[in-house]
View (cartoon, rainbow, N blue to C red):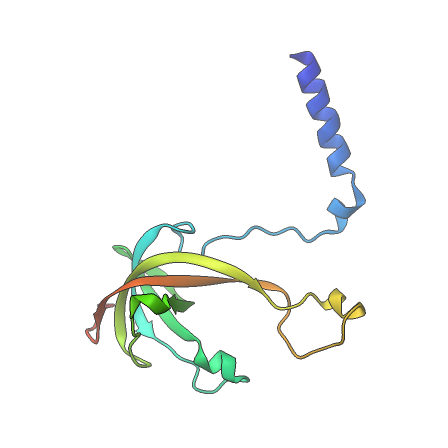
Length: 148
């Protein structure tokens, strides 16, 4: 047992002294909606599409201002990008429409780290980041005042 503890202490001290660990900006990826990634949940809010955006790709993104997750009203609304499966036939409602959806939170990395431009030509893009996405599995309700 003493051998295991001593080995663990040595490894911990060694790993903490690595120069890369000192220089990295370590962060934790947390779900935006507070229920974990991949868990089926219901959300309520209002559709919010970017009417004026810097790029066509940004304008095409379907977004939602979430006011309620499950049966819990959020203290502060959050905005999340919505995605649907093309084979599911789900059509998201118009901008400003109150909506209730079922699905799960997932996410993806996007952008390019600034230091990558040492090796590649500079292009207009966003900085490297993680973005939470809500994958819609069912449109439960649209058009009613969902966030009463």
